[in-house]
Length: 85
Image 1 (cartoon, rainbow, N blue to C red):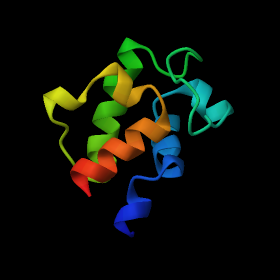
Image 2 (image 1 turned 135 degrees about the vertical axis):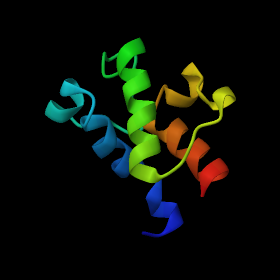
Image 3 (image 1 turned 45 degrees about the vertical axis):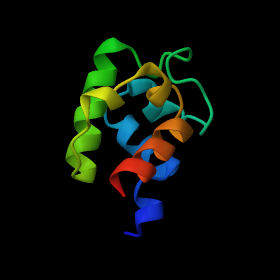
C-alpha cells in the first residue's frame, strides 16, 4: 500500500467501522465531525485509537490523542500522513 493511501480517509473510515456501529451503517464524510454525529464518543475513541494502531502498525504519541485530531477523518489522515508515513 502506498504511504499516501495508507492513511486515506477511506481507509480510516473502514477502521472506524470496526469500532462504531453507526459508521457501519453510514460511512462518514471526510470532513464530518465524528463527535457531533455520535460516530465517536470517549469509549469508542479509545477503541478507534487501538484499532488504528493495530491495523496500521503504528503507536500514537500521547500528545497526538487530541479532540481536534480525531474530530474529522480529514484531520486524522493529515496527522497520520505527516507523522507516521
